[in-house]
Length: 440
Image (cartoon, rainbow, N blue to C red; front, top):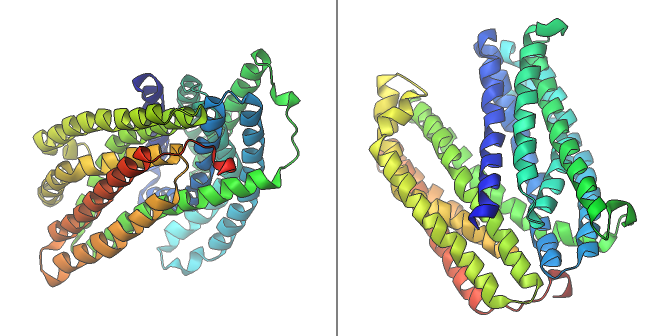
């Protein structure tokens, strides 16, 4: 599990580093440029989370086919994933273009708008490469070829940093494009991700008995329907979780500027550490899927619990780190005394319930390995929107507890999600019928 998970964890950390580099790169251009890049990136990723989440269904299909020794079936799922990604690219690019038209009506500062529109418009060029990268990555992970993914992320980070330096400020003979240069750098780095993983797939195929060239590239409607059917609930689960914390961010702005700033900083810290269980969850999906594919239900159960026990140990260490060094972690982001005071309290709350968040994302990965994507979606709907957000709103505003009350509500939602996902995995793994999803 560790061998499979650690390159994925590093790839996830490299992924969020790209966004941080973009914001830092435009910093000298002023606050309007920082705001344009930050808002544009967030809106773009909110759009992409749904499309990428649908493609997570490949974890189920490819890993189970690989576990059953059906390499030709793995290739067929890869092809169907590519067709699905291209279709999603058309739809999501259209939605993004429609959103671009409405930017002037968002009520933002004119200096931000004039920079946001070209930046976001150019970002839409990277929709297709990013979705194709997602397909290639899920495919390679299911075949346990995870180190190429890590190396591709490293290469893309280098390209992104170099292209930012050249295209934003005109270094090395390149034109100085400002924030538009940052968007071009992002496109180039995501193209590197997609092309590099495609090359790995082609090279790996040359040593296999079934190469990509031997696989029919015509779309198979039933496979695409399966990907969408299994993927939409997975995508909605992600959207529900991300949306809950986005709504919480809006609510913090109603409390105070210090509360809003502290919330954003804690979310940055939480997002960094969240990459560890997220990587383990991907490994769990693959290992469980392999066991299901070869018809070994006990091994599937062992793989899921191995990932969960490993995550519990790591999560406890992370909680001790967060609780022991709150001021040090917060000081990387701000020196404001008010934000530091509020942030310390919020970070201590996060340290308390962070293990539940870690366990739920790994449990979701294990459930995805057996083909269950609907249950986590429903559990997150109840945990965040029936328990977490309503309770947080009540404690924060009606109860007068401010941001502490809001985060206690969020904590209750994550505890509910963690416990319910673990209970679901326990029950499903004990009553597992080892049949490939397409035969179910």
